[in-house]
Image 1 (cartoon, rainbow, N blue to C red):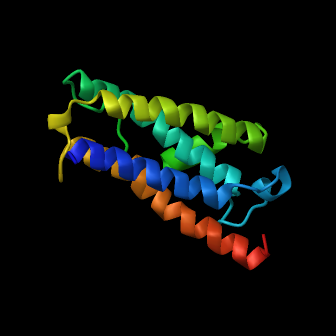
Image 2 (cartoon, helix red, strand yellow):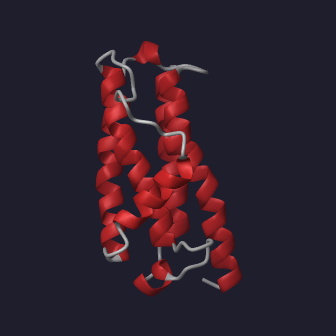
Image 3 (cartoon, one colour):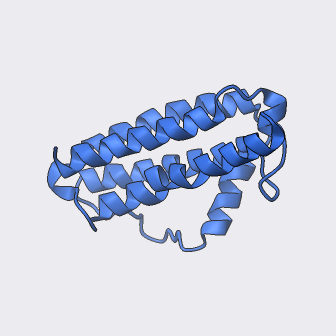
Length: 153
């Protein structure tokens, strides 16, 4: 299995793991604040935001360009997280989940468009997919599961 295939497979597995951690929650449960000032819907909104933002980076990598646009700085992660979560606060949790499904499909399509030789340990595309994708899902899936267990959900 190539580095690209393995990375994309890991991306899908961890995405499904997070989806399963969330599945079955209703709008009230998805909206309940439990993670600092965030609900599950807010967690999903910020994951969606990173995927949407990094879709462009992946598309640029596929064209042989730098992943980050000139003048864009992602170093203040907390600020970006808050921005992404805030953008979707007025949207129903089920709509946030539906939007995430759509954005995720576009994100994966962009990742698939990156040439095989750009994948590999330590390479930019792998670091990007870990930070905004599979590593991100791995971070939040256990948190959601632990919360659900505490709440009896």
